[in-house]
Image 1: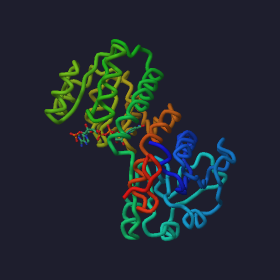
Image 2: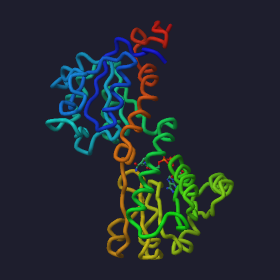
Image 3: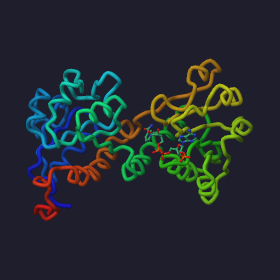
Image 4: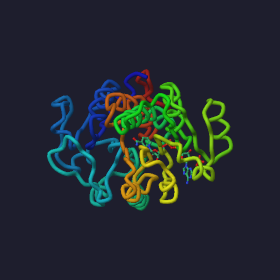
Length: 308
Ligand code: NAP
């Protein structure tokens, strides 16, 4: 794919080290970058820094928000910003019709507001091509956390993986490679069959209560309260829980603490443990996705021509 974003003004708003690696890749594709909340970043003058949302929304053909998006108050994660940046209704109302807004995960309130205001909101974190690649740094980061949280090797450990989605499968492959004794926990017969094919022990959720006492390390990827009071009570007090599921995770953390069980919620691992890789993953995906959502007069193909 050549300079497919030639002449496109992209607004990059906040973010973390992933954006530091993503932005030069977008520039290689021809994009002109307007940055808000990146003034302290190592990118220096390689991008144009703007000071207000107003200027951004007047000039940008597309807006890129970070993977994490915003918190519940609308605060945008912006590691390199001098001051807090909020995505509020006033900002949303200033986005011209047809200008797409890209984000990793959008909170329900943002989804609702953009729907009402007829803004094109595109979430990218849950797309398979992003989630599968992101599962690699996530799994590596989770294993690193498990190594730090235990006094045993991962090799030969009784490691449970809850959920056999994109992250769970990658975790199982890595844990097997390190020599862990892996138990996969899933609810769909097809997922249980897949885990068997991968050569690991499988159990379904009704069996968890009986089986969980053997676990030394538990990796949860299920975004629902699976590790509840009842299950926690059946665990060894020596176990380490690494919960990767989106906030608030799938563990009753308060109760785990009460029982003296080590349990950690581990959000945003790709951006923490491997920002360069995570930025490059975004760089692989974004040009095509942006292109798909630009107005036809701004779309160019890999040879630089206009798509009909
Ligand atoms: P995924 O492919 O959708 O997999 C989720 C798994 O959870 C599936 O196996 C699904 O099973 C299972 N599940 C969902 N709800 C369930 C329930 N109520 N009971 C039992 N099982 C349930 O998602 P993913 O990409 O692997 O991501 C997993 C989680 O990790 C998400 O919350 C995601 O946001 C988060 N994540 C975190 C990081 C990090 O850095 N910590 C990185 C990437 C992703 P079914 O198919 O049967 O529904």
